[in-house]
Structures are given as structure tokens and as C-alpha cells.
Length: 164
Image 1: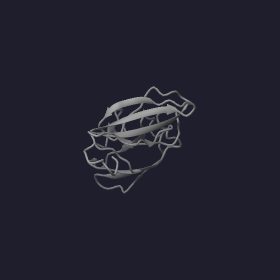
Image 2 (image 1 turned 90 degrees about the vertical axis):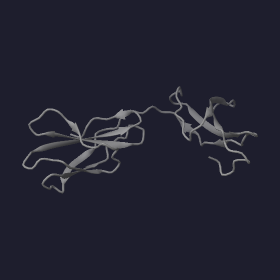
Image 3 (image 1 turned 180 degrees about the horizontal axis):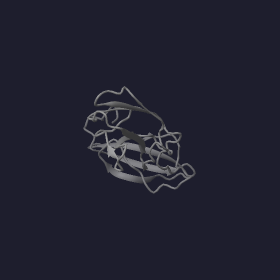
Image 4 (image 1 turned 60 degrees about the vertical axis):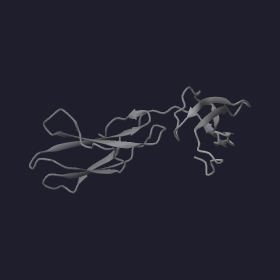
């Protein structure tokens, strides 16, 4: 939100876009009530500028303009690397890894850690909440049991292939 609300609460925002090669602005959304918006139907390879205007009962405020943004598609991230298990205890272990070589063109939002019995076939998700660190402590393990672990990275396009 802007630092000044013009003496009245902000009711919503108007978001507009234009290609840098054009002069005309196009309304993307005229009744935005949140501080973020997913914009679709952009043409790959085109460069865009976006602007946002706050609206209150007195009217529309001055626009805030973005820097030019090049539209490129993204894919799921690559597999995390260098998986390692440390801090082995009776009923827990810490799984550590390195970031994937490729984030798929979109920031990695988290990781999914999975385990399976060494003799089993089914992978079971270990983390209930999003993991943003490059390590995760897996608890509730059975003593004298052998486990395998794998980690997948996730971005806006989805979940990538798991670590080898």
C-alpha cells in the first residue's frame, strides 16, 4: 500500500500493463483488493511495463510503474544435488542437499522431502510444512531400519524431479 492514503482508506487497486513497444495502457484488473496479482496471457518474448494505482473514495492515486519485464516461460526446477544424511540418531536423521542447477526460470518456493523403507516401493512425504532451508530433520524413524530419502524442488510451475 502507498505511504499516504489521501485521507481515506484505500478501497482497491487498478493494475495496468503495456508492451514497451506501445504507448497505450491496458487494464489488467480494476478491482484488486490484495497486494499481489497473477497476470496471465502475456506473450513470450515481449517486454512489459506494469503500473498500479490505489483507489479511495476521492479517486485514483498516482501510478507506481515497474521497470520493464521480459516475459519468458518457466518450467519445474531440476533435481536438488548432493543429498547427504547427517546427525543420525535413534529415531531421527537430518537430510541435507544443495540447490538444483536450474530453478526453471522461477524462484524456488520450497522443497519436498520424502522417505521410504529400503525394501519398500512407496515414497512418503516427511514434511507437513514448506521447507525453505537446504536441510530437514526427519523424525519418527524406527531404530535398526534402513531408509532412503529423496528431495524435490518446487517453483511456480510445479514440483521437479527428485534428487537421484
